[in-house]
Image 1 (cartoon, rainbow, N blue to C red):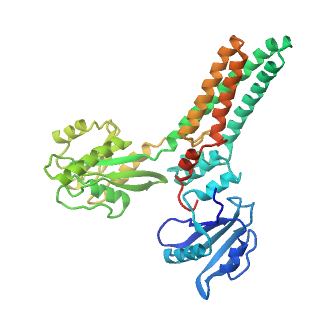
Image 2: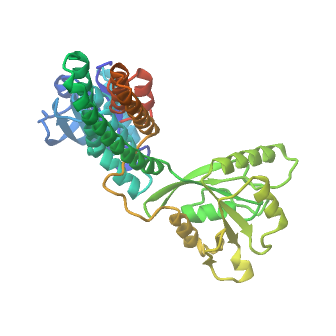
Length: 445
């Protein structure tokens, strides 16, 4: 790994009251003396100026974390300045002229992993915690980050190692004829107990995996039914173009929507109809792809016209199954906003008057399970479940080898189960695996 000092802006793009710049590297004291107007004290916040020769770039609060008591295990400096990107970039430019380079995505956390500050499961949990889409996902990610998942993995690993030692001792001391008969029963019981632990962990992990997915809703319907208007009401801003002319939306546009601390993606799609306009046809093709990829469809109907045969043809043509009917323009029909519980659910709203929009949010919230996270639910990934299942497969094979008294094959299956479990923790990880994990992070983390 390249141990050259790195820097990055750790706060999201845009203007804000404060911005944070993070620096990590070995022996950063020499760097500090070149740019800060005061000497830094380990783990103390110091108010000072950042200087570029005679020019003061900003007045900041700076915290210095001396290695190894830092996030990365190296010297770390966190500069809390004004959240103006011109100021922050000028500080980054100054750091780069002094030999610091721009950090790659996830490089701070990658250094923490290589410096044994965190294991691979915790590194993944940090990424999952940042991107968690609701409170349940946050709590599950915190379970992984706090080490609860690691404790269960280590307990299973210890049981496998103990059983391996038992088998190896039988192989190495074959002259003691009394040991095999006494040990085989113990080995078999240990393996079956371990299999039971893994099955429960797989179950919890699969439940947690579903939390690692941000739900996507595609807003679909005929042109001029009010799709973009409804999205603007949900977002509370004029994000999508709204006119009385049909076919205005020519592309599928995704927005992030927060509903009571539940973050979803909502997609505005082109109106579905027969058309000879090539650009509009491309928009409809993209709408069809959005329908396939969405978790649920919000199908918008012009309430003044009702659910027409053309609407039903669209629903059938694009295999729309999991959907909610949103009847818009109740201001024209003088109806009150309402929602029904029949399937498919129906919601009656007016985007023009912003009336009943909260009912759409209620329907979306209904899709999130209401039950609380159990203490043993983790925000797992596919690779965790894959390796747990491989571990389980090898342990189940052990039962046959015990019955046949095939000690060498038994030892090999135990070894393979141990390797599969170790892969979860990142012991002897491949470069491809590390690249896949850490490039999913934002820059500055």
